[in-house]
Image 1: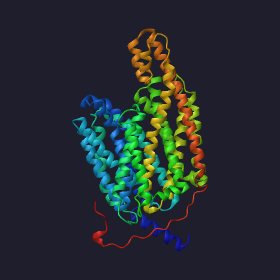
Image 2 (image 1 turned 90 degrees about the vertical axis):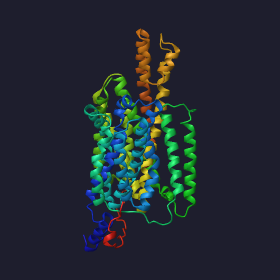
Image 3 (image 1 turned 45 degrees about the vertical axis):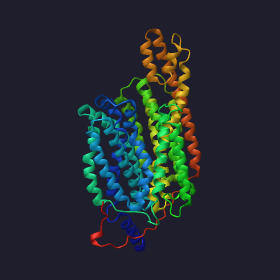
Image 4 (image 1 turned 180 degrees about the vertical axis):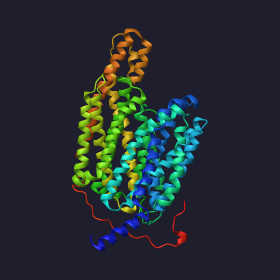
Length: 533
């Protein structure tokens, strides 16, 4: 390497990393992401204990579970673009602080209302942390080859967090009270805050023009309405409910107004011209389709393992671990695969492998087939993580460095929307295929068949109330109908995944690894050497 090239590389690293070791920075960012990912799932196993202690109503219990992802998803664009404006490190450290305070409030909550407020504050903190980690990573690793490796590690940590949440929650509940699932965040945040303040570099966008406060609020309110409506539809709420279609319509209208407003502004909050780049828009679409398939399948798989095969929640979590380990392996190998095969072939192959795994799982029946399930879950985890890795890396590399926070927020929002739509869409397909199988069961009244058609769990309850041969017949029919619904849902998922493979053909054929121009930060006085939080 020539002296000029070496000097240029050194200058890029110093400008992007502000003197910090970028791999140490990656560790700090991954710890941040791990906390947020764990907190998204850790409460699920604690719901029975929370219900017994705080005695929340049905609506309150729904908000305790849903308010965290709902608030987090709706505020991602707001805080992602705010980080571009005032500094991504500053927003991240504020998110650390709020996350720690909210964790303490949730752990000590003595009523359902206090816990809902605390969970909402955790969502605000998570929305500060998630896009900031990815945008700082984009800034610290200007070389695309190194950035691909960093994103692979980052995505592997995300997979670990999602799997560790229920297992960690189950362990803590066996030894402590339910508040411990939140209290565990505090010591980690007490370490992350000073370490992050010391090691993380500050970065921001070009700062041109005023920050669009009205646009940010429109985006937040619009996303809140859309995600709320989608989650309620996915939860089985009727179309006529006030918490389904009205917020969905209002949210969609606000998002349409937000897009129109951004197109007219000289200095938009989010540069929508990024979507004119095929690699960026295609990557966002691939993220939505991949999450749409993954989350719906995980939900249905958990029901199959527990209600059809009769496994305990812990056994169910252990059965799903191979999927997580395969996803980790794909994340760690992603950088090498991206360099060798390029974004187009990598993402397309990931979708095709996942579709094959989904079709393979249609062989599952009423009996436990460990080998088939292990093979299917390993292929599913590896294929989906390959797809998500390639899509995230392409999306982030296509975005201008000054728009890194907004681009990261768009990617995370696509992730959340895909998850919500997946639960709603695949849940609807599952119910449509399941319910007809319970009509006309010998000895079962029509009213009982209708009630049993809502879900397999409810069918078991109705069967227990009926008892005798009618109850046994209903239970047998419900299991068969659920397995049939599972097969139909898997085939629909395979079709969506193949659609994603076709969409991925618009991605670049090769990974462009040219060095990016990075401007050196302007000299500062010693007193101004660090941005205060």
